[in-house]
Length: 153
Image 1 (cartoon, rainbow, N blue to C red):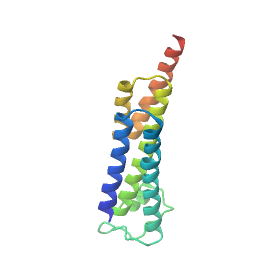
Image 2: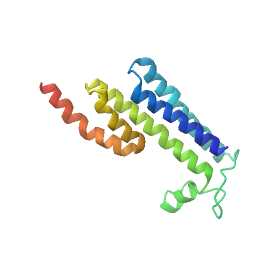
Image 3: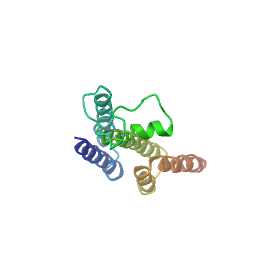
Image 4: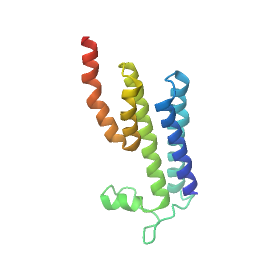
């Protein structure tokens, strides 16, 4: 089950990123990325997390891991226990996929609004796809100074 969900969420995310980077920036493709990409990933995350927490599915813990981690323990050890299962890894990965795609969508819309060429957006979007916070940080560092320069012209 977890391998199948992992593959499905990766396909959804990759399709969203492909549309975001390659497709024309029109309302329909951007709406598709939001609801068929980000929305489906959020739904998969919520459904899987709720199913594990309710005991409806086996998270398939790794050998030696607790069957039910302490969800109130937000220490490194507590988080390690949370992710010491196939279910924990897939749920966590889906969380990353959803939020990174949402950040990429925001970057693309913001870059369009500020007049950045698509070719200039592509490296930032690719970095966001590969390492979400790094791409977002680069965009935050680039967007305002460049927008101010454009506004002065």
